[in-house]
Image (cartoon, rainbow, N blue to C red; front, side):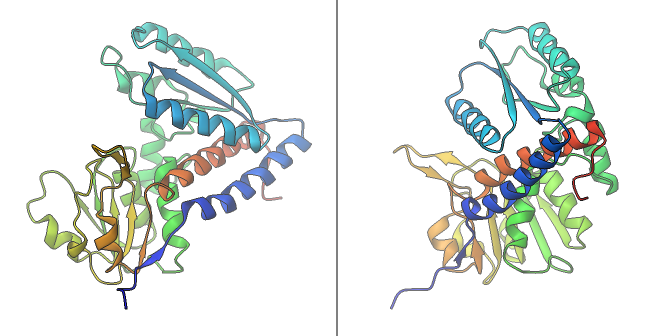
Length: 291
């Protein structure tokens, strides 16, 4: 008899629930003559970015939203990118937009993200939005962090009082996820590349979130039995297969719940980006979505 695997947390299934809420919000806005608009600025021809952008546009259109894509070559200047950002900022039909990362070396990423109007920053990367999140008065939260929380909630486990370990400290995933967990009264430990006792820290985690971008960096034997494991990483191996930051097979034999890669966090990120865009349209239009 084989070893029982932890329960799989399907982002594909849970994202459908988020998108159902998005569609309801779109319908409310349309009843007031407002069609939410999502803009995307993409620079260069990164294959992974192309896939993400196509998915976002497809999902937005399926929810009844308008989309607008601006594409620049990989040799685009910073001035050209900032000009497009300004165009999006001023476009009344675009309620929220994103600048698809990563950007070419000649473009200052921080400068570009800080130029996006905070009220249209549906990625949640502007310092104003990150600051609001820090104070617990969040407006737009990075979609991946929202997705992580939705996946944890789907298990039915109460975050309050749990020891959560977040491996990775990026402004896109690690820090905002840690803050959301903290706001929900978890005891949070943030680990990173300079953490010297990573194995010991991971072993204490009742909730483990890993986002470092290194294939199988967390061995399964490190995982605490019964833990909720959310693997944000998506990496391509030498043989072309996609894998996460956590060793899925071995971790699944110890975890109580675990996300797959792909099909875990990815669909949730897209769904919550749509949710942020509808929220932006509602705020800008002064329309309540909750009646």
